[in-house]
Amino acid sequence: MENKVIIITGASSGIGKALTLECNRLGAKLTLAARNMDKLNELAKQLKGSEHLLIQTDVTIEKECENLIRSTMDKFGRIDVLINNAGISMRALFNEVDLKVLHRVMDTNFWGTVYCSKFALPFLLYSKGSLVGVSSVAGYKGLPGRTGYSASKFAMNGFLEVVRIENMKNGLHVLTVCPGFTTSNIRNVALSKDGSAQGETPLEENKLMSAERVATKIVRAIDRRKDKLTLTTQGKITVLLNKFFPKFMDKMVYNHMAKEPHSPLK
Image (cartoon, rainbow, N blue to C red; front, side, top):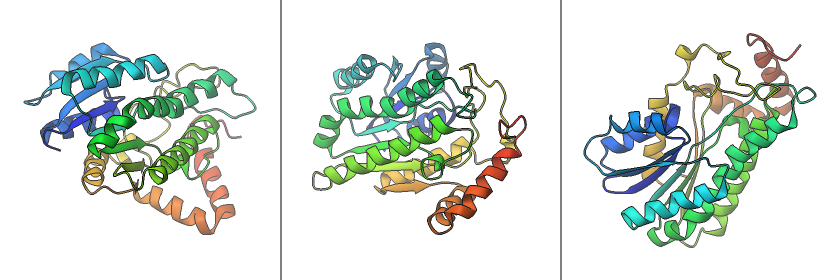
């Protein structure tokens, strides 16, 4: 990763923040994108040595994604890795949720990935670099109460797979990362049925894989140019069993989600 130019969206917290610190430790040149400029500035104070660029970016806005890529090229003259990490979750039953919630989740998770990837692709092809999407195990197995989230991650997985196949003779590396439950604030800011922030996590965060460990594994997968990375033991088991016993896994994920505090499942 030393001297590689790496763009990280959603860099201000969670996995994005952990990725930033890990890539900085390894000597990468970083473009960090997030909506909250104050958090980006605080993060920048922790960076050591290598060059970095902070760009306030809402990935749901196409022009801001284009500006992110253009600004990176203006400063560094190349792009080696794009990590599409910006994301948002939701928790509500489909028959109760306001459709604006699904639009917002899809705009962030799916379209944000599409926009940034589209504008970065010519430069990644030139550098034979890496296009990375931080998806989720929810992109392999639909999770009840999270229609918009699962739909966005299924869409991400399909999009990245096609981009990989289309460019398999062009030297482009495409990595789809699917973590299981990871410590981050994504559940605290997850959208409820009316679009307001959930405000508290329904999980015991101290029992989950840390964002720092996830970041280390992602960086290693980029270095090894892996196609897919599924994380956490629970996540790997879920994906594996769902291939062979989908009906059984339907019941398992239902029961698991129904046990969450204040679960929308009755």
